[in-house]
Amino acid sequence: MTRPVIVWLRRDLRLADQPAFAAAVQAGPVISVFVLDDETPKHRRMGGASRWWLHHSLASLAADLEKFGSKLILRRGVAPDVIAELARETGASAVHCLRHYEPWWRNAEKALKAALPDDCTLERHDGNYLMPPGSVTTGSGQPYKIYTPFWRALAQHMPPAKPLPAPERLDAPDAWPHSDPLSDWALLPTKPDWATGFGEEWTPGEAGAAVRLEAFDRCARLYEEQRNLPSVEGTSRLSPHLHFGEISPATVWHATMDAGGSVETFLKELVWRDYAQNVIAQFPDYGKANAREGFDAFPWRDPSDPEVARDLAAWQQGRTGYPLVDAGMRQLWATGWMHNRVRMVAASFLIKHLLIDWRVGETWFWDTLVDADYGSNATNWQWTSGTGVDSNMFVRIMAPLTQSDKFDAAGYIRHWVPELAGLSDTAIHDPEAAGKYVKGYPKKVIGHKEARERALAAHAKTKA
Image 1 (tube, rainbow, N blue to C red):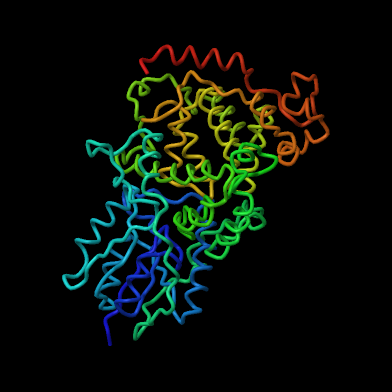
Image 2 (image 1 turned 90 degrees about the vertical axis):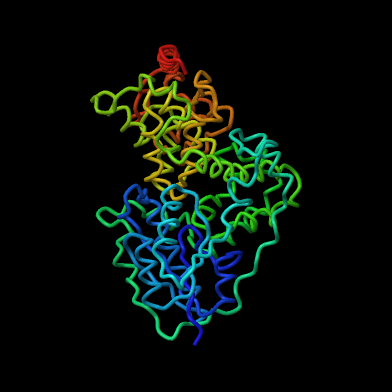
């Protein structure tokens, strides 16, 4: 029999437009494996919301593979060691995978190449992004640091190649290696089960991604007009499916590119995802280190101080007294997701109203977002805080009360902050200013003017 080949899966949990699968099926019997790596030093362990999604995505992929008479092998441990041992155990001739650009995965790919038996090769493919990070460069051959020129340069290469179809067959090996039961990984929360609302909101897996894309395709032409309106929800909600690789960005591009209207704004958001990977490829520590060193001396308030800890808890729980911020944080906790416009408002509030380090917020989002992506999460937080290589100026302080009214968030607030549901469209954005003190709803943790002055004074103390 032909020696089997391994497909090493990470954030690429699909069969269609999956170059590792496309190459593997031509080489021999396929053994698909996912390794849960919580052990490798410096490996960033998935947050709770992502683990919920991962459980259901793996179950969906396993069911899809079973339709081919194939299986999904689950192992846990140090990923390079586990894959290398599996290659020896099965006599595999090659390991196929998609390249990943998080620093821990780049290290793992390098370690795996060294650990594989001499007669087993590591075959890496591109396919998680529109173009491989680092491949779009300036005239001098340097990678871009600023988004706008990056977009213009990448757009010259679009559309991407047409998506590959799913394999027509997956040959099985002579014998299947041992697999952990998915339930043994305890990825789902239990005591308590804080994810009860996730299942009502999401259908993880390749089929769920296809349904979400089809639904969005019908309104993609109105993206610019609707994406900033939390009460309308004009965004695609494809981000967790893209993050876990249940659908490729090329598939999304080709499905939406001819929608007309303002669809280009949406396509730019797809490119932002590529841009974020381009950034972490240049700056692997972007999730924990200021890109602008002047901010290293910024006088952030210390969360170990009881007063600051109370402010942080109010933000996390959606009890700041700012209805739009609170609605977003409650949506995040209930569904593992937050509307894009509201994410910016909530992040800005933590950084500039509460003067709490952006890394505290990045860590919270990492644990609570189902689409928690290292590149996108870090890039978005550093953009908001003014610390990034391409970022908003710190002194531009977003006004959450104005944002709420400007983007007609009344319906959104009523849904997620039901104690305010009885207020008028005018009063609901700022109950205090309207003289409406609703029982059970907190007063503002800090006034907007006071917060703005404090933030500007703190910034003036730095050389940023």
